[in-house]
Length: 113
Image (cartoon, rainbow, N blue to C red):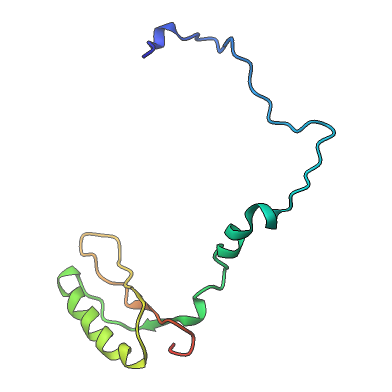
């Protein structure tokens, strides 16, 4: 371990910074699809999943002590239309932690939503 007292204070270091520049005659012959093909295919698109999400407005605003009951009621009502794959209940910042009065429900496909 090095003490900070041994480090130069004026920024003079003996090591030369590495150069990450390509040589002048360098030719990049690999395209992005070849190099990152699998990553680009799996990259989420902006519209992924948006068609299968339902926004429910005018949901009762409840605190943490009643949130589980609200979730059960919502799930019972909306699971009649299909399997719910994801639920999100936004809450207000603050000591009460009330829900905001709207929720997001996601179904497996657009058909169910």
